[in-house]
Length: 199
Image (cartoon, rainbow, N blue to C red; front, side):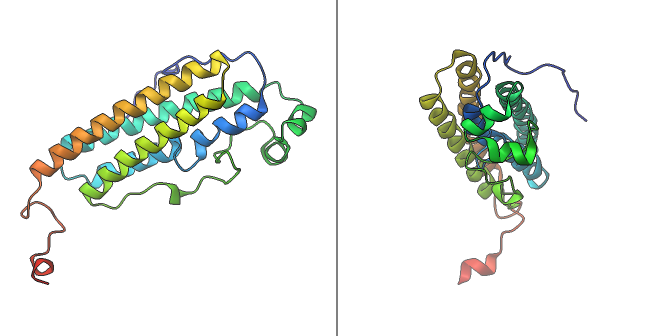
């Protein structure tokens, strides 16, 4: 059970409409390295995590990623809320506008819709944690790419906050990997097959 606090983890107050920027940032909503896939990944992986403390960490970070998704959606919404049809067309946002008007739809910056193929849950503790480490680094890279092309301070501030959280999550998953490796062995690593080692 979650308790929902009705405020963003970081404030978003964008004053100027810019559909071109929205089209870039939306990738962190529904793109392959976005917040939606991160939250689904961690909240799915937690069930098969054999180390309960690590399962709790996956729940905590997965929940936080839902909050990050809200921040991204708030940015995209605020960048498009006063959008005119002409601005959508001029900015190359018209195809999105035709399909979704100004509604929020999870997709990558290139327009590819979100799919469950964008997150992994293998049920193998080590595999999943390496996936999580890589996911946090990929998300950090996307935020850094966004920060290279976006200069508006009202947008840069929440993006820097989100990038910093990716770094913290990467560190927590590194600690979780070490904790998991220390606690797993042939007796409690449920997929261990001694016959496989004889081959």
